[in-house]
Image 1 (cartoon, rainbow, N blue to C red):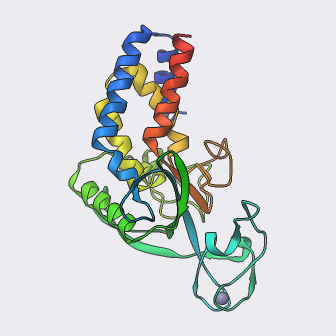
Image 2 (cartoon, rainbow, N blue to C red; image 1 turned 90 degrees about the vertical axis):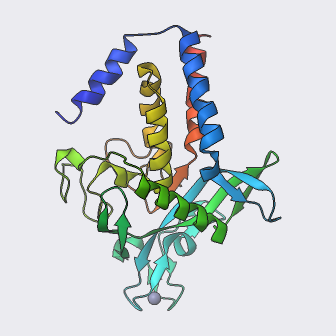
Length: 273
Ligand SMILES: [Zn+2]
């Protein structure tokens, strides 16, 4: 359990070291204000009027599989997700050759990419952004990502390669098969902690951590991690499946600023009812 000891000690020490609600409130408000002025742009998207800026609530990322019949790429969201039911269908059709498929029989499409944190090329399961849920003027909308959204992701990648951010090998060893709940398939290419995050959320989370020095506020941040990393699926419950590090084929990349604000609000209610 040496992998769990530091976080377990940190969490229990904070349960036992309460601070005045006013101190927590001030630090929390400062942090949210900092995020809103410096980092809100990473969660902005252009509305369909081509001028209003929308605030992203979440982005859905989809696995890509290879059709065993025609070997072409299948974007899981486009082929297997039913917008009518909000569920993944057990059987679906290849959009290229119409073969009937199920996820069990498919292999992940993989890709080689430059990992800006490890500063070397790496391989991973291919995931692509497929849906953006956002608000403009208090109204919710959905859209498919456009060239402008890809520009934002490119800017984030550039920033990540210029920053010095820390990531750790999984279970202090990395590589493949790093622990009892490592699984071939969905953990392909996941060797370090940052691989559990989208580049956008990894960048923002680092900014949050750097900015926040109050231990009780850092404790609050650790409680949102499973809601803002790739454990959070689009079709499953909040925080992903318990007891495993399962990454679904449809990942929901949530806006960290919003998740953090909600968490702070509920903690303040508990501290200072
Ligand atoms: Zn096919």
